[in-house]
Length: 174
Image (tube, rainbow, N blue to C red; front, top):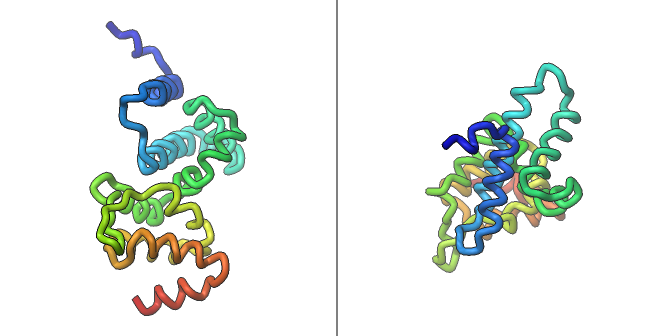
């Protein structure tokens, strides 16, 4: 029986997301899985429309598709998934560094108190304060290599609100 074979990609993603959302006993999508899903949606849209739409129109279409898949309004997507979308918009070397940190085998990191921590939106909410791609890549590499803990990663990002030089100095000497 091919009931689902005629669904568009958007319809299939919406159905899958709704299925996960309505089953309380099923495992919730993790932060990393949502970021990867949103990134894959963006990649598909960029590939499909790069010759016909500008960057702003691609970004709008991407947010519309995320809203459709998650059954949220565009405003709700912006409020609920701001950090997810920011990270999912990365490409090239920066996406590679981020996905290396978010991979299932690497999503759990040892914190200072030796408990295993899963990376969540909480850890990345201030990552946008890191100004350059090079600084972002270096910070993600430090996290991936366990040179810094998830708490230190977040503290560095939060500290950027007040002192951008802190990251530059720390990155120079690490």
